[in-house]
Amino acid sequence: MPKERTASRNAKDKDEEGGWKPWVRDIAIALIIMAVILGGVYAYTGVWPPLVVVESASMQHSSTESFIGVIDTGDLVFVQAAPTRADVVTYLQGRATGYSTYGDYGDVIIFRIASQPQATPIIHRAIMYVKQNGTYADVPDLALLPSSEYQGYRGSVAVPGAFGLTNVTVRQMGFNHNLVINFPVEDFIQTFHRAGYITMGDHNAPSFDRPDQWFPAQGDIIGHARGEIPWFGLIKLLLSPAPYCCQGWGDPHAAASSWNGLALSIVFLIALPFILEAAGWAWGKYAWPRIKPHLPRWRKPAETRPPPEDLEDEATGDEPREGSSGP
Image (cartoon, rainbow, N blue to C red; front, side):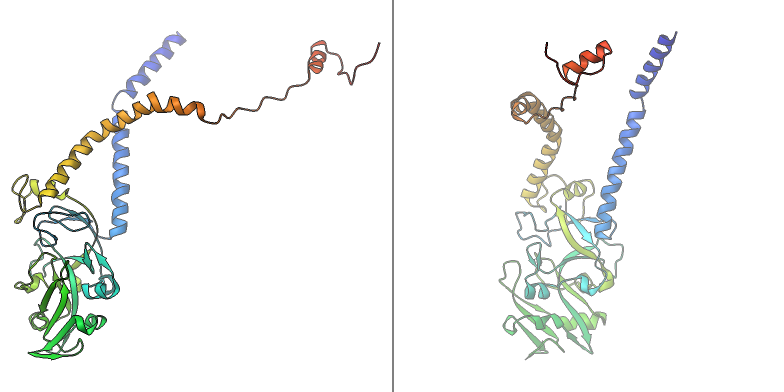
């Protein structure tokens, strides 16, 4: 009977092990891992959601090709909170100090359109911070640059310095440093009557035709871009197309190299479990048997045993002999 009970208990334990409990355990472990990862990302970014999908080509450095380290259509970009002016490095500041992100000077920021709070946020490079000075504008960061690299104007008159301006011309701009761009700083001040950032996409022709999409205040900024996952945002754009992309696989609004990179990445992820399985089998079959004989062996020290004479005395019950006597 005890054997039957033991066998029955073992069979029950096996049934439970092959039932729903392992599934619950695996799901719980997966959820814990996911919570730890998302919690770590949120702790780093301070923003939720911590990722945004780039829906247009405004930040690209080519019309036909995408690059790792540059923000392209279909990239996933991490967003880190930037609540104060000190958290944003403008293009002018970055150019003066050598600080760059995503292939050009300064920070890339993600911001809401103040007049359209429900609209998709904009991702642009922060070029300069402009402050109101009566009917004119001050651009303090200009003073960081050599005077040969910019020119301030009051009306049509060129003026020295960075204060009391209507227009600013900055030379050697763009990711190829071959553009001369004029910024109508007074227009932004007279439109909004506040300080803010003049922004541009790296790929934009600066027409500044929509001031609210080019001049966010500090309070409109969600954060600055920090890191990217290339190409995988295209999956979201395929499932939920945006105005600029994507109406199907291979949509030309995203670079062909981005589609190719996504395809190769998906194939690699599908193949990865099989690659790991094959690698484990090859290791156990070929590599480990060749490595194992050459590894140092650690043996357990032998137990200290009494001399044979002492063992004989223990067997007979006699007192141990201190030494041997002659005949």
